[in-house]
Length: 173
Image 1 (cartoon, rainbow, N blue to C red):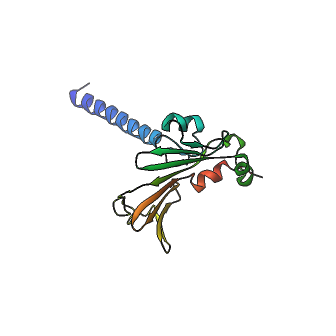
Image 2 (cartoon, rainbow, N blue to C red; image 1 turned 120 degrees about the horizontal axis):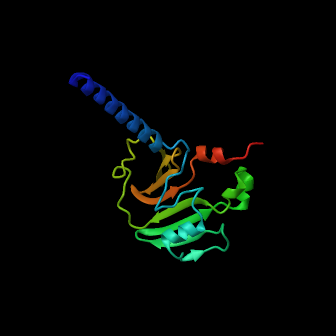
Image 3 (cartoon, rainbow, N blue to C red; image 1 turned 60 degrees about the vertical axis):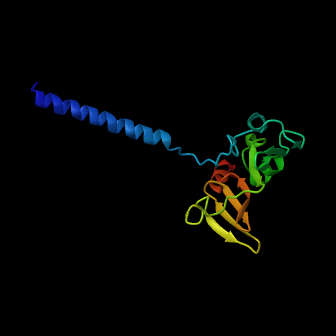
């Protein structure tokens, strides 16, 4: 085999391998399932009470039971974690095995300096803006993230399951 043919054959195999690897990486990195935004390793409809306590430590206040509410003091404010309970399972007709998973994570910010501009929300098409008399809310329904601003300052961030994820876990019929 001439050097030229060998070179082109080797180059073709190598470029085919690179394209194949790039395609595999793209497919592996693209998660087909819809998932909620994760905060501090905690994910709605996936994480459970033990996961939350492992990440955040002992709560400062806890409602009893696996589906009770947990409250934590963290740097910069407080965190309230709400769990899926039997009533939510029945009302939303979701899979019973989701009872006890995280439903929402609510961060109450103390003296936050973040604004819609500093968080890049103003021109971000993923977020819908909703104005009320005293507050502005930026909602990203696709990822389940909500930012609440009062006087231009971040007061609350909420992580919840996206609507599409909830519809996927609902029982049919």
